[in-house]
Image 1: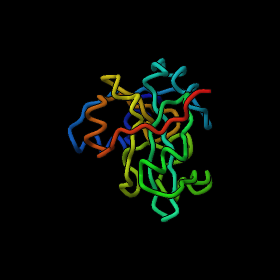
Image 2 (image 1 turned 90 degrees about the horizontal axis):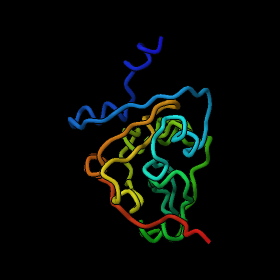
Image 3 (image 1 turned 30 degrees about the vertical axis):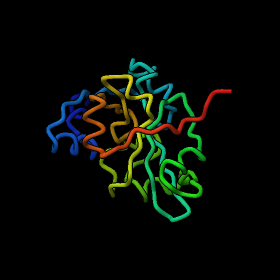
Image 4 (image 1 turned 90 degrees about the vertical axis):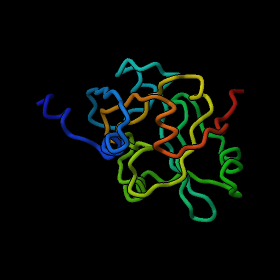
Amino acid sequence: MAKKEKEIKTNAMRMLDKHNISYKVLQYECEEFIDGVHTAQATGAPPEQSFKTLVLQGKSRQYYVFALPVAAEVDLKEAAKVVGEKSLEMVPVKEIMAVTGYVRGGCSPLGMKKQYPVFLGKEALEFEELYISGGRIGTTLCLKTADFLEVSKARAAEFTAKKP
């Protein structure tokens, strides 16, 4: 059964394949949502190189995708400045599937139903590779940071909350 599981491609994987971008798939056993820190521990991925995906919506009703370190929180005011909105709000969990095509805990910044503007935490630029959700619970992808920026058309920015 595990072999068959590996053969199932997600939209994120299909997007990377289409652009001839190499990546590694890390899988872990998980029945339901776990946070990014626990996901990194489950896969053995370095937590500082692991990025979670948050989808925010501006006053304009436009959606924005933010990939930030798994242990960090988004600074909504900074994120709003980055995208040029007055304010941003998290998309409610019950709407994630309708907006992105992914479930909570398996939301990848790659291969969403629509191409929304993507922003990557500047912290990622310190690393040659980063780890992101593979597009379903239990799947993480590792790819070169430069490749992620290119394929997602992401802009690196500072929007993580500062630790007190």
